[in-house]
Image 1 (cartoon, one colour):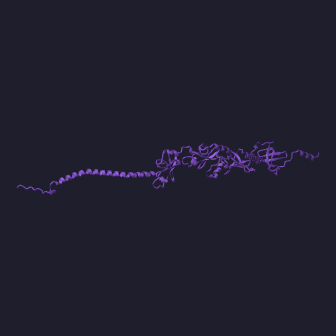
Image 2 (cartoon, helix red, strand yellow):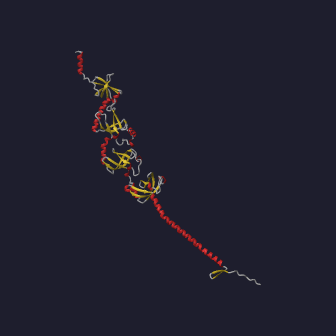
Image 3 (cartoon, helix red, strand yellow):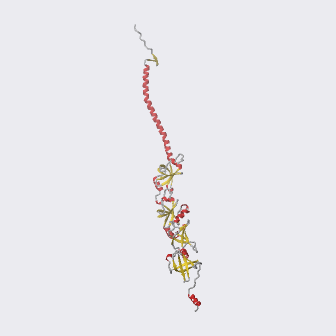
Length: 429
């Protein structure tokens, strides 16, 4: 047998030669493995290489790959200088991962991912070098950024705090190429959410967890439900800052006051006594009450009424005088008296007046003034009469004495008074 015949005989008995096809995924036998590269062999025909840039895999622990192991890698190109075929373990892993995510999308399976970075609208999940997304709108209530005015910088700061945190998610969107896959954290709680809605009724008192705070709202969650407590339902008093009543993460008791399908309204203040009812027990229309000045506004003063109500005394009801500066009439913390003009507790309405007390006082003084003056006149007349009576007898006596003295040496003839001449004594001779 010639050498040529021997060659053909060996060739027939050997495995067929495999021609590499770009982007094909093939199973290889590891010849050599290190942290920087892996050399593989296919049917003893070629020695091909996987470089460090293509070693990462989410479906396989590369550090455990040893000589003789079978691995799957994708053919990505050729190195003309070395004659080696270039392979990628990472791209083969990406193909398997995309296929798996398609299966997850169909089965609605829940799995765990860890975001590696964030931007203003997304959390980014890096799997085998492909970045997929969890949109902000798909976060559960406890992770959603509750930011005043939707400030982009504050939203980003909140999302950056979630980087590195494990999230349970479902696939809610996937395309054939696997370039647009969207994860949702809140999608996996939908079943639990629906079950919770079934037993919630108006009037139920439930302990909820505060998940966010804004100027006019407290956001609270319960068994993956999240709804709002409006600032008007936090307390019977005027609430200017909801953060003074609760912090994120606090557990608070609320009452369900309204349900419409999956929309729920909650109240904290309904668990407390209604101050309007309490106030109605203490006073009525026409009563004069005393209360401290809680604050001053350009419209008037707010008084802290009995029962816990803060109510306005309008600027027009402060005084009969022209009120230019309210501070010149009352100070914060000072107690003032007001008259209840109107009071309808069922409608949460009361009208208070300070100037009504001024009018009442002036009328009373007007009515009393003539009486006082008349009394004074009577007293004056009595004093004068007394003085006249005391002085009169004295004058009559004095007059009588004077007359007696004058009539000495006078002679009365025919009711005429004639003065007698003096008697001359005749000397005796």
